[in-house]
Length: 182
Ligand code: HEM
Image (tube, rainbow, N blue to C red; front, side, top):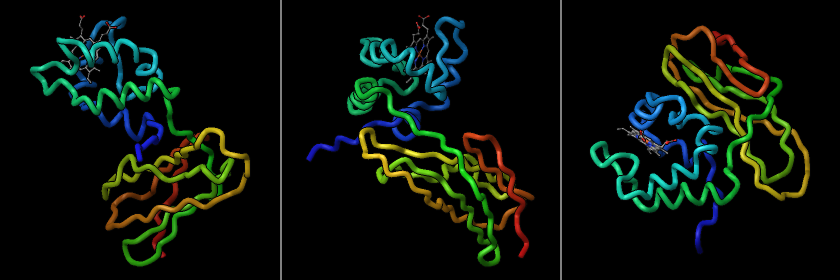
């Protein structure tokens, strides 16, 4: 059976762009510049991007690892044809960071999800001993019957850590949770 999963910007589109693509394309004059980490910019320039991914002189350029394989071009095109899916950024509540065992922690919070199709999780932005940053995200399937409920989201963190706090980003901003010692 064909996989009809809707492409999502943060999960499937943004990872196809390398740091090199981002650096080269943000150096251009303002009218041509595209920041591939920015959903709105990629969406706004998507027709030009599709054209240049398919161009005989393609982007990314032949001298820098281009062109993309056809499957990647098809995936980008399918994203443009399925209303530019992206993750939702919900607001959490009841944030907790608990010490489970030496150097083992559980980060958790509650999230109100709109229906049973919606999944929420902590995306990892930084997971080093000296930097711990997580972002609360949610994926929703369009058209699911509303059935609001509050669910708990968890992420296990393994140390040893040298940070004094773990940072969590949600729609309300940054939450700083001190690292528990007991
Ligand atoms: C997936 C990767 C890339 C995509 C989708 C992409 C897409 C595009 C698009 C859509 C434009 C036209 C912008 C406009 O006229 O409004 C453009 C221009 C340009 N890109 Fe990229 N690009 C990519 C990677 C790169 C890389 C790796 C380089 C350099 C090594 C590069 C160099 C340029 C340059 C120099 C222009 C301006 C060309 C001109 O003056 O008309 N791009 N690119």
